[in-house]
Amino acid sequence: MRLTRIETFTTPDIGFVRVTDATGAVGWGQVSTYHSDITANVLHRQIAPWVLGVEIEDQDDLFDRAAEKEHKFPGSYICRAMGGVETALWDLRGKVAGVPVATLLGGSPGPLRAYASSMKRDITPEAEVERFKKLIGEKGFDALKFRIGAECGRGVDEWEGRTEAIIAAIGGAFRSEGITLLADANSCYAPPAAIHYGRMLEDHGITHYEEPCPYWELEQTAEVSAALDIDVTGGEQDCWIPTWKRMFELKAVDIAQPDVLYAGGIGRTMRIARMAAEHGLPVTPHSANLSLVTLFTMHLLRAIPNAGKYLEFSIEEEDYYPWQYGLYVNDPYVIEDGHARVTDAPGWGVEIAPEWLAKSRYAVSEVEA
Image (cartoon, rainbow, N blue to C red; front, side, top):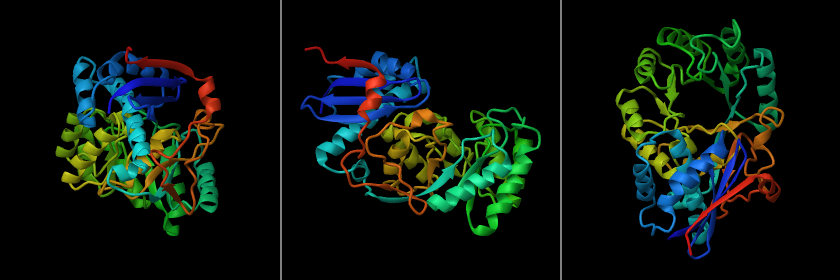
């Protein structure tokens, strides 16, 4: 296989990627959300030159070489840009083979238990409880995640007393119902506070404690993990493979949470999953919006042997995340009885809406004739 054209269609929030190979076969992928227009510039400037016109014998090695060529830029934007081309290649390969990407990865189509993932901190505990009850009734979710602390909050709550109140409210409303409960601190706490709130979570039946400390302070997270019985989880922000190696060696987390697009694509996420498996850890990826990252994660979870208990599924509606709506011709995110489903359609099994593409910013890199 040899790529001859890479096209991007972007807004500041979303960036889709279309690749074409020398036979004319086409595949669709996506760079990571948030500043996707900047990421597309990185893709055309720093990834396309190393992957266009190259005979692809080993896809993982192709992107490793691209990263090595850009060794002065080892951070997030390179990985976010690589992920756009890499995920498009998987779609192309699936369409050529006539099978879903999950099958190419060694898995199969089928259902996935999902958890309802709240992104809101500007919501009262009472309102969050009512929202979850409505979703349980409408969608059948049996797992829920809520937010505590403030995002990178340096120990400060979103407003005084909110964390204590929401832990008690969520635990009180759902623990006796057999609902699995998860909490996300988004790097808020130093270890003493993280341990304090972790014990409070344990007392209220919450079983998953995400990113309690600044994610870059792995020793702090390891300290918290060692002190608590609750599963301490993390890794969504991490894109550098040596960081993952150190995270696992420190026993910093009980559950690994790579983000397919922050990490640089399916291949690199599979590598992280294999490393996690070597340390006996499950993988519950970060997929906190309804761009293609959740679909990529669905196919991945249907394939890896150490898949976690559930898929993260954003519950935010158009008033809160308007940019994650109107993206597809065929909605891949139907939840029934608390489950999403990977179809048997080839590739990713989704078509990007022409109306959305028509409003996006277009750019192309291609092999010179």
